[in-house]
Image (cartoon, rainbow, N blue to C red; front, top):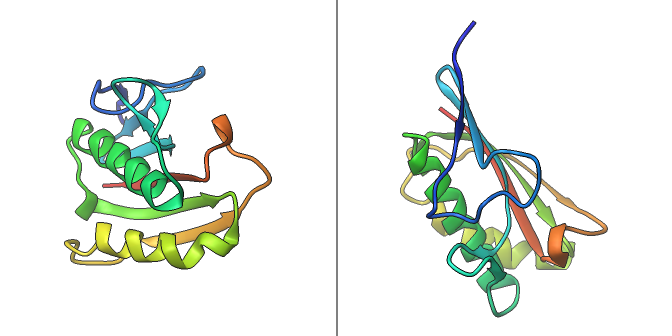
Amino acid sequence: MSTITPVSTPNAPSAIGPYSQAIKAGEFVFVSGCIPLVPSTMQIVEGGIEEQTKQALTNLKAVLEASSSSVGKVVKTTVFLKNMEDFATVNKIYEEFFSGSEHKPARSAVEVARLPKDVLFEIECIAG
């Protein structure tokens, strides 16, 4: 069986529950849901869906880098939205975030009733 290693970085918000920021299992990295907390304050970034999406993606990138992975190695994402009306706005920011990758990751996007700390956006991923 491959080695399983928890990942932790101060460049992303610390876990707000009994979980790891990410887990490395063999060649894969499983990143926990990233919400738009500012790592230095652990407070939700000010602003609306655009600011929250950008902050959560910044946090995702930090965890990937701490895992010795990168945005370009993401194979699957799951996006959680408070309001599907924000999909077009989120999609534009998401597309820009992954624009430097050689491929577009597989993705699911769902509207949920509520997210941790009542944020508007959350994203998790699996990367190589």
